[in-house]
Image (cartoon, rainbow, N blue to C red; front, top):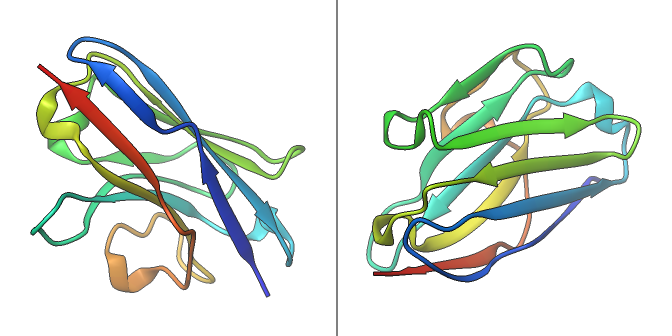
Length: 124
């Protein structure tokens, strides 16, 4: 069983930065492509960024390109999301997820394991 635990959320003013972490335990972490998703109140959960098993390939939603950076430390079994130049529209619950198969999955349905989420609130 794979378990994911996010941390690092909080409240920040527009233009600020936050770094989210996702600790992975259970089956071999290094086997999974990983991703970050977010869900704002009253909206569907959307993909933010994805990273391949080896960390060399990444995908970003258009809305976060140039501001967010996804990375992973396979030695520490940890996934990261560095968020800079935050905007009020980035306010959401952020989830990390792991996929059993695939190279660079981007759809919510591609992912099999999910964390409980960490709240990010950006004020104007």
